[in-house]
Length: 308
Image (cartoon, rainbow, N blue to C red; front, side):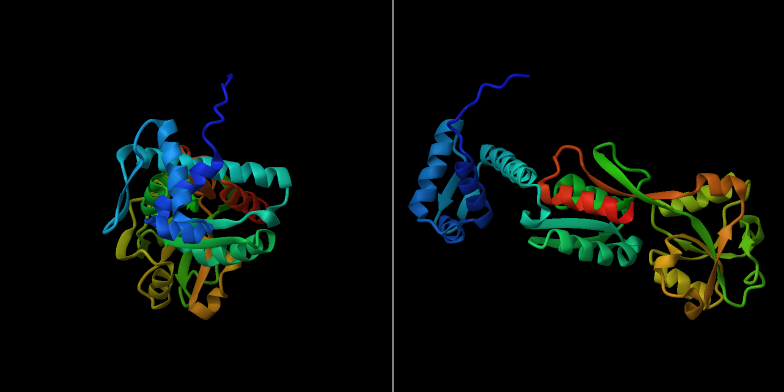
């Protein structure tokens, strides 16, 4: 595809408009850019002339308000600046030069074992990127990715929206959680049939909750007899330790504190059908509609190398 270059629109104009829109006032934009407000106003006026439409309305009492065209141009201008930043970072070939904010998400139960080592490794490679993270559950993370409030998120690669792209990182196996004094606590492994009749502590957060129910169905068993439900791994473990039932969870046991100190033991699932179908993949996901900026791409690359 051939493009006819239009040198009229400059990155400087895009930058002035984006900063002014984010700042809310010309004076604050001028402070951030170390420029005179009049110079920023002239730059935005020239951008409006090129676009052929008014992009913002300036009111003393309410500051800067974007028009409908201004909202569209703001989104595209910000993507343009992020792409320019990515090109510059690629030309430098050095992640240490990447700068700016990055907001990432993580499925709630993965965060304790995923976010701390990732932040440490990313800070070592990209020391000038300011990373903030959000812990949430599956649907909330997807909504935030599609809304643009998250650049990328650690998720289980199940039931993902087709509007998202993902990069697989590592796989996790299901395991059965028993009280420390359970009759099967000394067994090397346990099948779902062994615990089918026992009270069940259900980790009630999709997509993992659906996968657990599928495991029972794949084994030809009735759904588990749910005694309690919780969206917290810690609460599920505590209820199992208290003898309130057994559970099935997904996680990397080697990343956890010693389970014996928590009053529970974990057992590999022996059901052949279950073990071949139930393994879950942890991936990084991001919106298809927005190309990864240099910071988000670096986050994906560092995660792939660190966890892969």
